[in-house]
Image 1 (cartoon, rainbow, N blue to C red):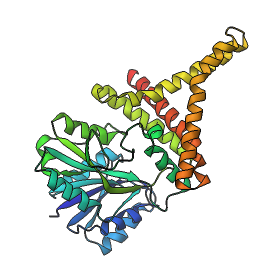
Image 2 (image 1 turned 30 degrees about the horizontal axis):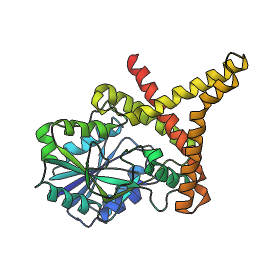
Image 3 (image 1 turned 90 degrees about the vertical axis):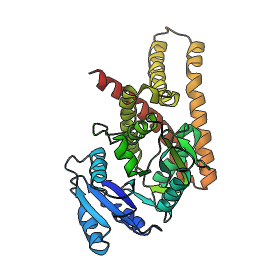
Image 4 (image 1 turned 45 degrees about the horizontal axis):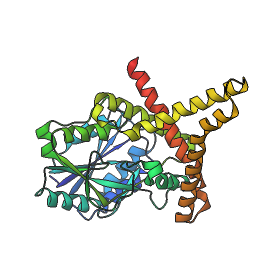
Length: 334
């Protein structure tokens, strides 16, 4: 029985899974098992895992016939026998001291508060694409992160949710906390909210670094944001108390853009004058200037013109999330 079992849910991760597992093999804490839960991949993911299993007996492979990430994590948890479990995605790599940082923080704070888990800080890996790095830089800003888990922070602090967490397994068993297998997005937030509701504390450690590969183009990123918005909408219906203003701002942006389109149409019919139309357009002018300002800041901070992508990433994030949130509401009503 290992001290920590790392549960890695994957599906079609042939591009990244090798790097992910090798980063786990290098952990300064060696008393671990690495449980890879494969969701019926149809690429080379399982072959890569099996090749690494031959060299490192700590790596195990389980098959997730339900394919989705929530069932994968439950399957891995049920197979675990360790004192602690940690969750990771197959398209992420971790710093060598990732587990050690989480583990020692947990042990230290366990004497001070009713702690359930310690989570990680997300950043872009050095070999990520320019577009992927730009996404990460955007999400770290206030304009792109709105105080979410992606925002850049410096101190250990309590949070309502956090990714890639180390939990004490016996605590989760005692409280009967499992992943909701109907959640296809925001599954971590749902899981962590169950913990918070029972009076436990979650911490985020800014030095427990997880390097996560981002989407490679604007289209993929926009689709991802739509899915995130859908997940947040469903979670907000399930737990009204998790809904915050930052979740609604993208929705308001979508409605505002629809209002602009309507205003432009009726202006061509001379139903509103140019002064009224100008007033209507002031918020979008401010948004564009803010978008441009943050884009310039990112390009100057990271000294690359390639980060001009940020000018499109910010609106893709906000619009995608807003559209997804509305889509989730409509789906629930149906």
